[in-house]
Length: 162
Image (tube, rainbow, N blue to C red; front, side):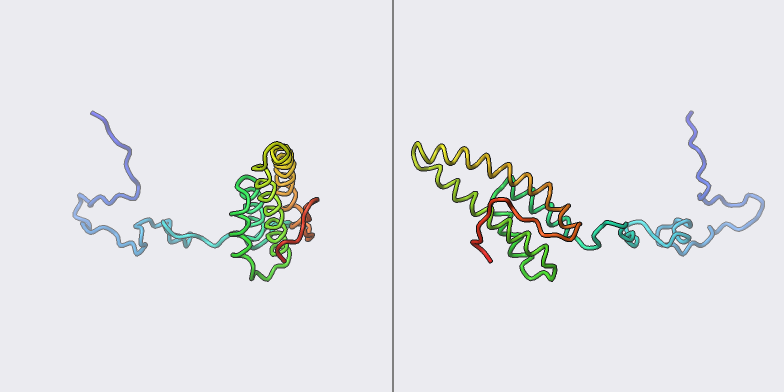
């Protein structure tokens, strides 16, 4: 026969003629310790304050996500982030999304050149590799530049979108 450990919060009626009603607990979870902490199951607490060197909003995460998605998937993520964050008040974020979209357009043009026989194949392969490396470098360096308060500039870029 197996026995289970007793739960200290479990109600047991008093065999000596005491009260047979369980103690009242106004906590929504029935957990008295939840009252002392002020948080309940399913509730989110107050988010912690940003540490020194951290950005309070989600702009840094947007820059990181745009950089990495655009490096691997090209123009579509860059266009989505540019359209969504076009009206943002932070000029560094807006500038990065614009730079990424312009560079993604260059990558798309190089990809289209790859359809031209022989010379296009060479340009497409070499240009694609160089652009992929530059996009990875941007995905790594851009968040650091943003945290330092500077705009990241791609080494090779043209202003197709302003």
